[in-house]
Image (tube, rainbow, N blue to C red; front, top):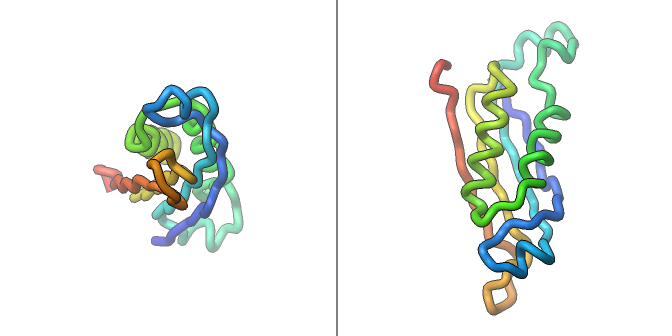
Length: 121
């Protein structure tokens, strides 16, 4: 087993419950950890044997482009898309952070973090 980390992916998106958030948008950071078997690609040096993290990035990008009210909803959609795409994925963790959220005071971010495990592993 091994871990792939996609760290601090930045997206400008339109997630939030307030109309202003859905209109003006905000910056988001997404961190992703993917757990998968790495023995075969470690020996073969062949991308076809590996979990392609470029595809993982594009799945996250696609889900981040869909406006949503809740970060929980966005995070769950990201995990579902990853497990649909990668049959070799054993476990995944996603953290979605809204930068400078409209909370009435200074705050770096608010985050939601969700994990999911492949039930067939």
